[in-house]
Image (cartoon, rainbow, N blue to C red; front, side):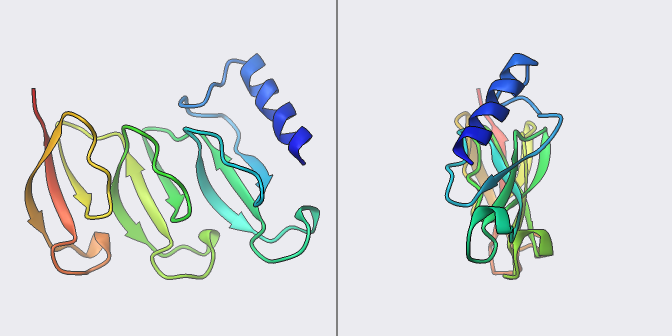
Length: 144
């Protein structure tokens, strides 16, 4: 499986798709493989080709300007979390998927979101798009 991932990444590099740029086609990797930096997990499933266990295969891609990613996915640098929801493509847990995006000058982000450099929090709110807990959403503004 490692050789398949390496071959896929080399092919993507050869055709000009680099991590951090939106990829044309997602790549399936086994769950025991590291997700490359700048890539996100967009779904999980069970695959006999990845050995035993359940939800042992991940579909990964480089994110576009806005992307739905599984909760298990790292949030790439420069992105914020703007919503949390439940989606079966990310397994069976509640609130197992997040919507990430490159922020604009002003953005409402979930409490769990990283705050990118150059942004400040200006207020806190409660919103159902971020899971429903009190003060679970923040308004951020770009400064400078």
